[in-house]
Length: 295
Image (cartoon, rainbow, N blue to C red):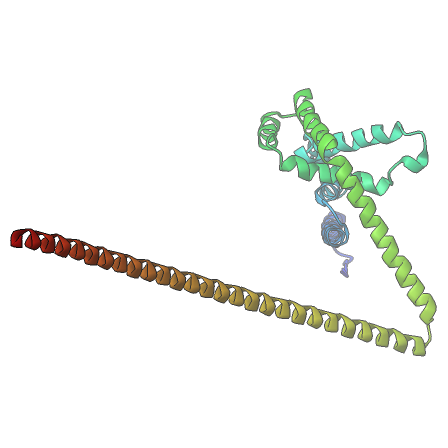
C-alpha cells in the first residue's frame, strides 16, 4: 500500500503531526491485518501437511497472534492470565509423562523418535475423548476458573488408562508406518537411480508406470472374472444340490407310497383269504348238519 503525504507550507505544525499520526496508525493497522492473514494461511497450510491432531498447534499459533500481534498490552495480559484449554492441559500431562518414560531409558537406541512424542500424546487425547470419563472430567474443568490439582488428577487418570491399554499398540503402529514410508522411499530412490535423469530415462519411467497401471488393471479384471466364475460355480452347485435333494425326496416319497400301496394290497388279500376261509368253514358246518338230519 502506497501513501503519498503532501504538506503545504501554510499548514500548522499540529495539523501536520495529526495527519502523520493517523497515517502511521493506518499503516500499522494494515500491516497487522496482513500479518494475521498470513498466520491464518500458515494454519491452513500446516493443517493439510501435518498427519495427526492439529488442535494444539492451532492453539499455539492463536496464542502467538494474540501475544505478538495485539494492538494493546492489556490483551496480552488477559491471554496470559486465561487458563489453558482442556486439550492443552491433557497434552501437557501426556508429553510430560512420555518425557519421563524416555528419560528413564539409558540406551538411546531404545528411545522413541521425538517426532513420535507429539503423535502419541495426540493419540492419547483421541483415546481419552472416547472414554466414559471424558464428559464428566470436561464438566469439572468448565466449572473451574483456573487449572487445579483436581483437574490435573482427572486427566492423569485418563492418560494412565491410555498408557496401560493402548500406548504400546499405537507405538507399534507408528513404527510400522515409519518403516513402510522408508521402504517406499528406498524403492523410489532405487528406481530413480536405475533410470537416471535423461529424457530417455523419463520415457522409461512413463512406460514403467503405464505397464504397472496396465498390469494392475489386468489383475483387477482377472480377480473380478475369477470371483464371478466362483460365484457362478457356487450357484450351479447349490442348484444341483437342491435338485438332487428334491429328486431324493421325490423318490423317497414314491417309495413310501409304493410300500404303503403294497401293504394295503397285502392287507386286502389277507382279509379276502380270511373271508374265504370263514366261508369254507361255515359251508362245512352246514353240510355236516345236513348229513346228521338225513341219518
